[in-house]
Image 1: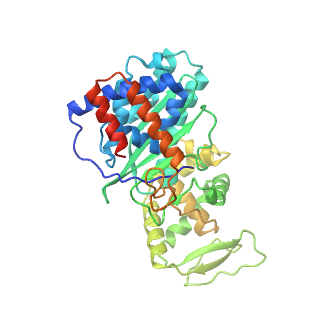
Image 2: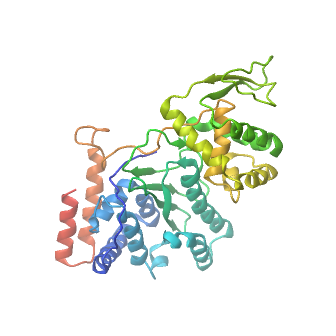
Image 3: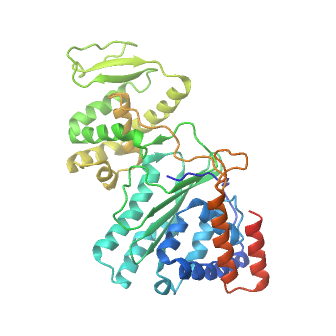
Length: 402
């Protein structure tokens, strides 16, 4: 996965109408050129590149380091192609806030207008819903999604650009997805094309990491074991959620039972062997918050009853069940980790990166070839765009100053 971080601070104001109109105008002209030169599928693919997306927003005259770049740019592009979607072969659904929840209906409507096979339309809708579910439930980074835009072509290529906010630290984080066809993606294993954020967290429950496979496998086994067996594990954690110890199951079926430490009585686990380890300050605080969160949830039991009844065959099927969200996934993950010893990844999937690299080689040397290619393509699009010479000159200067 390509990863990058830019400085996104939450915006509280609104884009002035005069500026939005100019962004739409230039965005329309540049989209025409880019689609003509590279085709709709390639245009959609480039939107999925965080650097490309950021650069395009900057060229269209928006502040490069503001969260509003995401929401305004996607809204401007959607407005720029309005009425010409079929001519261009590019379609955009969703947007900010309440508009994001209309994404499935907008995709379905376009599928009907374009006479797309029902299977293709259904898969596009599924892709939209699952990308949002993954970033709200599997990447547990304390960012709440508030923006979701879905770009797609008649061929089935699609890109998602969605953004979350953390009101506690006043920052935003943007998630990029892309697939060349509706079925060619594993939603639960490192599916992103990029995640851009200002803050790099030391501990993020990252269930899309390949390192979280065992944790997810055991979660499915727990669901498959049935409601009563699963709830026994849940109740065990609820009972001992305040203990300053962590139990890790060494063996699922040990030859003998050894249950002792910290005075915890683990009723019902005579056939389980445990070892206890002290939490360090950061780790205990992290787990304590998670434990308190899911122990207070009365809705959790109803969802767990539903998922054990539906018996999903894999983790993606589990996540796709209606009602399954961050708390359900976190509860299963905690049981898998604390009782059965399958620790998930806590590595934040976002990484610090400035454009194509840093001039001091931090976090990695500048990729000059890619950097020059990005600049060259944008300059070419601006020069060919049908805008006035003054606006064209300003856009070219903005590119040169980046």
